[in-house]
Length: 111
Length: 118
Image 1: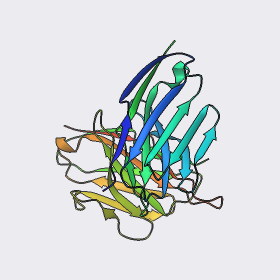
Image 2 (image 1 turned 120 degrees about the vertical axis):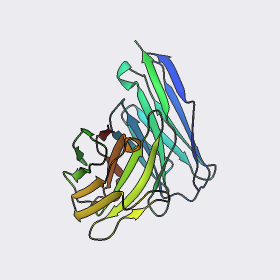
Image 3 (image 1 turned 180 degrees about the vertical axis):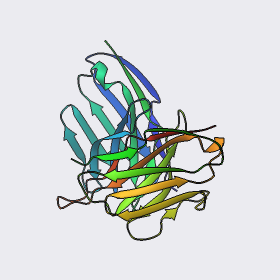
Image 4 (image 1 turned 90 degrees about the horizontal axis):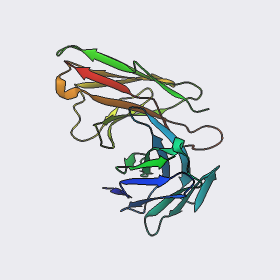
Protein backbone atom coordinates (compact mmCIF):
# COMPACT_ATOMS: atom_id res chain seq x y z
CA UNK A 1 0.00 0.00 0.00
CA UNK A 2 1.31 3.41 -0.96
CA UNK A 3 2.26 5.61 2.00
CA UNK A 4 2.73 9.33 1.43
CA UNK A 5 4.52 11.48 3.98
CA UNK A 6 4.80 15.26 4.01
CA UNK A 7 7.36 17.15 6.01
CA UNK A 8 7.10 19.53 7.76
CA UNK A 9 3.53 19.31 9.04
CA UNK A 10 3.46 23.07 9.53
CA UNK A 11 5.57 25.98 8.41
CA UNK A 12 5.51 29.68 9.26
CA UNK A 13 7.61 32.14 7.29
CA UNK A 14 7.81 35.91 6.79
CA UNK A 15 6.50 37.32 3.55
CA UNK A 16 9.01 37.16 0.71
CA UNK A 17 10.78 34.04 1.88
CA UNK A 18 10.92 31.00 -0.39
CA UNK A 19 8.99 27.91 0.67
CA UNK A 20 10.18 24.31 0.36
CA UNK A 21 7.65 21.57 0.96
CA UNK A 22 8.68 17.93 0.93
CA UNK A 23 6.76 14.82 -0.03
CA UNK A 24 7.97 11.22 0.06
CA UNK A 25 6.25 8.04 -1.05
CA UNK A 26 7.03 4.39 -0.45
CA UNK A 27 6.17 2.77 -3.78
CA UNK A 28 8.04 4.24 -6.74
CA UNK A 29 5.69 2.58 -9.27
CA UNK A 30 3.56 5.67 -9.63
CA UNK A 31 1.50 6.94 -12.55
CA UNK A 32 1.58 10.67 -11.76
CA UNK A 33 2.02 12.99 -8.82
CA UNK A 34 -0.16 16.02 -8.16
CA UNK A 35 0.20 18.92 -5.74
CA UNK A 36 -2.91 20.59 -4.36
CA UNK A 37 -3.77 23.52 -2.18
CA UNK A 38 -6.63 23.43 0.33
CA UNK A 39 -7.99 26.47 2.13
CA UNK A 40 -9.90 25.89 5.42
CA UNK A 41 -13.32 24.37 4.83
CA UNK A 42 -12.82 24.29 1.08
CA UNK A 43 -12.13 21.75 -1.61
CA UNK A 44 -8.78 21.17 -3.30
CA UNK A 45 -7.22 23.36 -5.95
CA UNK A 46 -4.85 21.64 -8.34
CA UNK A 47 -1.46 23.35 -8.49
CA UNK A 48 0.79 21.12 -10.55
CA UNK A 49 0.65 17.67 -12.11
CA UNK A 50 3.91 15.85 -12.80
CA UNK A 51 3.79 12.88 -15.12
CA UNK A 52 5.88 9.94 -13.96
CA UNK A 53 8.27 10.46 -16.88
CA UNK A 54 8.91 14.10 -15.96
CA UNK A 55 11.41 15.53 -13.50
CA UNK A 56 9.74 18.86 -12.82
CA UNK A 57 6.87 21.18 -13.62
CA UNK A 58 6.66 24.94 -13.28
CA UNK A 59 3.76 27.35 -13.05
CA UNK A 60 4.45 30.96 -12.14
CA UNK A 61 6.09 31.07 -8.70
CA UNK A 62 5.59 27.34 -8.23
CA UNK A 63 8.05 24.63 -9.16
CA UNK A 64 7.64 20.95 -8.36
CA UNK A 65 10.33 18.32 -8.81
CA UNK A 66 9.95 14.56 -8.92
CA UNK A 67 12.56 11.91 -8.22
CA UNK A 68 10.70 8.66 -8.70
CA UNK A 69 13.62 6.38 -7.89
CA UNK A 70 14.08 7.89 -4.44
CA UNK A 71 10.34 8.37 -3.89
CA UNK A 72 10.46 12.13 -3.43
CA UNK A 73 8.84 15.28 -4.68
CA UNK A 74 9.47 18.84 -3.61
CA UNK A 75 7.26 21.87 -4.10
CA UNK A 76 9.02 25.23 -4.19
CA UNK A 77 7.10 28.46 -3.83
CA UNK A 78 9.16 31.54 -4.59
CA UNK A 79 8.73 34.91 -2.88
CA UNK A 80 5.88 33.81 -0.62
CA UNK A 81 2.87 36.07 -0.04
CA UNK A 82 0.22 36.04 2.71
CA UNK A 83 -2.24 34.70 0.13
CA UNK A 84 -0.11 31.56 -0.09
CA UNK A 85 -1.20 30.61 3.42
CA UNK A 86 -3.04 27.28 3.09
CA UNK A 87 -2.54 23.56 3.47
CA UNK A 88 -0.57 21.96 0.65
CA UNK A 89 -1.27 18.36 -0.18
CA UNK A 90 0.86 15.97 -2.16
CA UNK A 91 -0.99 13.11 -3.87
CA UNK A 92 0.42 10.14 -5.71
CA UNK A 93 -1.42 8.26 -8.45
CA UNK A 94 -1.05 4.52 -8.49
CA UNK A 95 -1.32 2.70 -11.81
CA UNK A 96 -5.04 2.09 -11.20
CA UNK A 97 -5.35 5.88 -10.97
CA UNK A 98 -6.25 5.97 -7.29
CA UNK A 99 -4.81 8.86 -5.34
CA UNK A 100 -2.96 8.46 -2.07
CA UNK A 101 -2.67 11.69 -0.11
CA UNK A 102 -0.13 12.93 2.34
CA UNK A 103 -1.40 14.58 5.52
CA UNK A 104 -0.40 17.99 4.20
CA UNK A 105 1.84 20.88 5.16
CA UNK A 106 0.04 23.87 6.66
CA UNK A 107 1.77 27.06 5.59
CA UNK A 108 1.41 30.46 7.23
CA UNK A 109 3.01 33.44 5.54
CA UNK A 110 3.31 36.39 7.92
CA UNK A 111 2.89 39.88 6.51
CA UNK B 1 -10.99 25.11 -17.40
CA UNK B 2 -11.43 21.85 -15.44
CA UNK B 3 -14.07 23.06 -13.02
CA UNK B 4 -15.93 20.66 -10.77
CA UNK B 5 -18.98 21.74 -8.81
CA UNK B 6 -20.75 20.11 -5.87
CA UNK B 7 -24.21 20.65 -4.55
CA UNK B 8 -25.20 21.31 -1.85
CA UNK B 9 -22.24 22.95 -0.14
CA UNK B 10 -23.77 22.36 3.28
CA UNK B 11 -26.56 20.13 4.49
CA UNK B 12 -27.99 19.46 7.92
CA UNK B 13 -30.34 16.53 8.30
CA UNK B 14 -31.98 14.44 10.95
CA UNK B 15 -30.74 11.00 11.83
CA UNK B 16 -32.34 8.33 9.66
CA UNK B 17 -32.88 10.47 6.59
CA UNK B 18 -31.07 10.17 3.26
CA UNK B 19 -28.99 12.88 1.67
CA UNK B 20 -27.96 13.17 -1.98
CA UNK B 21 -24.83 15.04 -3.03
CA UNK B 22 -24.21 15.95 -6.67
CA UNK B 23 -20.84 16.28 -8.36
CA UNK B 24 -20.60 17.84 -11.83
CA UNK B 25 -17.74 18.42 -14.21
CA UNK B 26 -18.67 21.72 -15.81
CA UNK B 27 -16.31 22.07 -18.75
CA UNK B 28 -15.05 18.58 -19.46
CA UNK B 29 -16.34 15.05 -19.62
CA UNK B 30 -15.29 12.67 -16.90
CA UNK B 31 -15.60 8.94 -17.35
CA UNK B 32 -14.18 8.51 -13.89
CA UNK B 33 -15.10 10.42 -10.74
CA UNK B 34 -14.04 9.80 -7.18
CA UNK B 35 -15.66 10.35 -3.80
CA UNK B 36 -13.61 11.20 -0.74
CA UNK B 37 -14.31 11.84 2.89
CA UNK B 38 -12.28 14.17 5.06
CA UNK B 39 -12.32 14.34 8.84
CA UNK B 40 -11.17 17.48 10.67
CA UNK B 41 -7.40 18.01 10.55
CA UNK B 42 -6.97 14.87 8.46
CA UNK B 43 -6.27 14.20 4.84
CA UNK B 44 -8.70 12.83 2.30
CA UNK B 45 -9.80 9.22 2.39
CA UNK B 46 -10.95 7.65 -0.87
CA UNK B 47 -14.38 6.10 -0.51
CA UNK B 48 -15.15 4.90 -4.01
CA UNK B 49 -14.40 5.21 -7.69
CA UNK B 50 -17.36 6.05 -9.89
CA UNK B 51 -17.30 4.97 -13.53
CA UNK B 52 -19.82 6.28 -16.01
CA UNK B 53 -22.31 3.60 -16.96
CA UNK B 54 -21.05 0.96 -14.57
CA UNK B 55 -21.08 0.12 -10.89
CA UNK B 56 -18.89 2.02 -8.49
CA UNK B 57 -15.85 0.41 -6.94
CA UNK B 58 -15.75 0.84 -3.17
CA UNK B 59 -12.68 0.92 -0.98
CA UNK B 60 -12.30 -1.59 1.78
CA UNK B 61 -14.41 -0.73 4.80
CA UNK B 62 -16.85 1.49 2.93
CA UNK B 63 -20.43 0.22 3.01
CA UNK B 64 -21.80 0.26 -0.53
CA UNK B 65 -25.40 -0.04 0.68
CA UNK B 66 -24.96 3.01 2.85
CA UNK B 67 -23.11 5.18 0.34
CA UNK B 68 -24.92 4.77 -2.97
CA UNK B 69 -23.08 6.10 -6.00
CA UNK B 70 -24.57 6.71 -9.42
CA UNK B 71 -22.61 7.99 -12.42
CA UNK B 72 -25.39 8.36 -14.96
CA UNK B 73 -23.65 10.71 -17.39
CA UNK B 74 -20.18 11.90 -18.34
CA UNK B 75 -20.63 15.05 -16.27
CA UNK B 76 -22.60 13.92 -13.22
CA UNK B 77 -22.03 11.58 -10.32
CA UNK B 78 -24.17 11.44 -7.21
CA UNK B 79 -23.48 10.14 -3.72
CA UNK B 80 -26.46 9.27 -1.54
CA UNK B 81 -25.87 8.76 2.15
CA UNK B 82 -28.72 6.50 3.19
CA UNK B 83 -30.18 6.38 6.69
CA UNK B 84 -27.62 8.91 7.86
CA UNK B 85 -26.35 8.86 11.42
CA UNK B 86 -24.26 11.37 13.37
CA UNK B 87 -21.10 9.39 12.67
CA UNK B 88 -21.65 10.06 8.96
CA UNK B 89 -21.12 13.77 9.61
CA UNK B 90 -18.09 14.76 7.61
CA UNK B 91 -16.76 16.76 4.69
CA UNK B 92 -17.40 14.92 1.42
CA UNK B 93 -15.38 15.88 -1.63
CA UNK B 94 -15.66 14.61 -5.17
CA UNK B 95 -13.13 14.75 -7.95
CA UNK B 96 -13.20 14.12 -11.66
CA UNK B 97 -10.46 12.84 -13.89
CA UNK B 98 -9.73 15.01 -16.92
CA UNK B 99 -8.44 12.83 -19.73
CA UNK B 100 -9.06 15.39 -22.44
CA UNK B 101 -7.62 15.72 -25.92
CA UNK B 102 -4.59 17.50 -24.47
CA UNK B 103 -3.76 14.44 -22.42
CA UNK B 104 -4.24 13.44 -18.82
CA UNK B 105 -4.47 16.55 -16.66
CA UNK B 106 -5.02 14.79 -13.37
CA UNK B 107 -7.89 15.03 -10.96
CA UNK B 108 -9.89 18.16 -10.27
CA UNK B 109 -11.81 18.56 -7.08
CA UNK B 110 -15.16 19.99 -6.16
CA UNK B 111 -15.53 22.51 -3.32
CA UNK B 112 -16.86 19.87 -0.93
CA UNK B 113 -20.10 19.27 0.95
CA UNK B 114 -20.29 19.64 4.71
CA UNK B 115 -22.79 17.09 6.04
CA UNK B 116 -24.06 17.39 9.59
CA UNK B 117 -26.39 14.71 10.91
CA UNK B 118 -28.28 15.62 14.05
